[in-house]
Amino acid sequence: MKQLLFSFFLLLLVKSMIAQVCHCPLGQPFCDSLNPIKVFSITNEKSLELCGYIEVKNSDTIYQGIACIECRHQKIIDEWDETERCRVEKKDDTLFITELYTLPIGKGFKDIEAPFYVYKLY
Image (cartoon, rainbow, N blue to C red; front, top):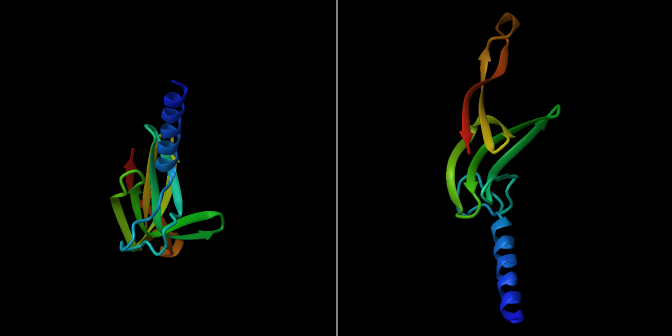
């Protein structure tokens, strides 16, 4: 009986460890390496990963050429190419991906990056 309980516990432990490992799929655009640039944990033991490119300017993180992938099934949820600049933020169990557009809305029609589309993934 002890061996059966130990085996069951070991199986659960291995399963939970496998579920936590996230890799970018090979051969997909925007995925130069196997390591995701960011992993977000969502409820029900689900995780979303971002594969692509990241740029940090003045404590502002901009993502370009990204793919959002569900870790467990390695399923691509959505993609944004290199011309689309995005901010990513997680609030509670929702991931917000905000596409930024450069618009002439500043003083003297100066170009300013402004939020344009917001994608909610939950």
